[in-house]
Image 1 (cartoon, rainbow, N blue to C red):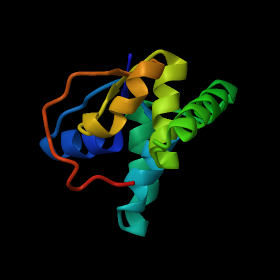
Image 2 (cartoon, one colour):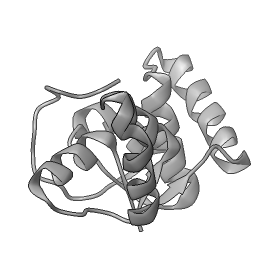
Image 3 (cartoon, rainbow, N blue to C red):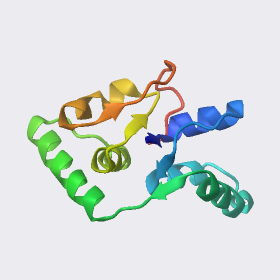
Length: 127
């Protein structure tokens, strides 16, 4: 199973493609906040039809805290949204589809698996 990061979701929708199986609730939030208010409800419904939306359950929360502790010890913190998305992928045993491999690379040693996507820059990334 593949968890889709916000950048890949946006890029694939622009191309008319569907990538992956699931999205984090944080990806839904990041996606919806960038749309006009009147379009959000329908867009949310479409995302929920197309993907499994994974929320902040106990597994994700505990994994987030473990990652936060490890990264804080090393002085390498990620923003909360990305750390939650990474924790979701790790705790659910999913590959993360992201165009921001460099950004998430520090989580590989903690069990994050990055799925194959085309190379892109961090330009346009939402945090």
